[in-house]
Image (cartoon, rainbow, N blue to C red; front, side):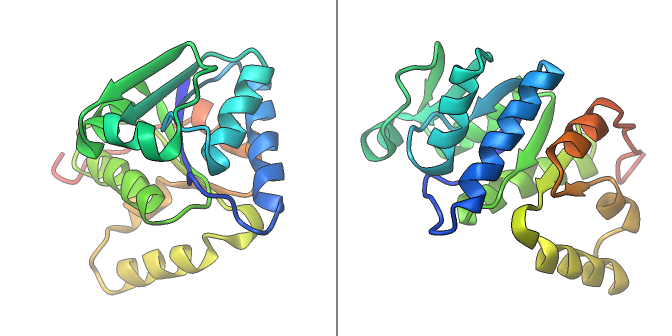
Length: 186
């Protein structure tokens, strides 16, 4: 199973995020998962890709030509797709992946995970989407999503379909046992 991890090209000053990234990749090894990610050697992207290489996992990177200069592509990985735009990057990562996990990150991470969640909601795919809630990073987001449900802007089933956990083993097991829900207009 190929699983995309969305995360930052930047590290936090709190080392727990790097430690938990390594723990997640070690759990990938236990579940025979492959990694699809943004192709960089910087930040958490570098942490997950280097740990995956260390664990002899299949690693697929997808990076834009202009980001190669800014983020430095991880040349250690065997499969590195180079694309023209971020839109192309997101589309190829979605196509290549059987599931999606958002680690703590910034705007790019949010954009990537919310796009695949939206695509699941409207029926473009039936793949699991997860938030790796390290250090309670996504707690306020979960509160916000529940407010969206309460106010009628998101159907509860589209929040309930999300895998939200701080436990890498639970995330991987729930990905393996994921049951797709009906799309918005099915």
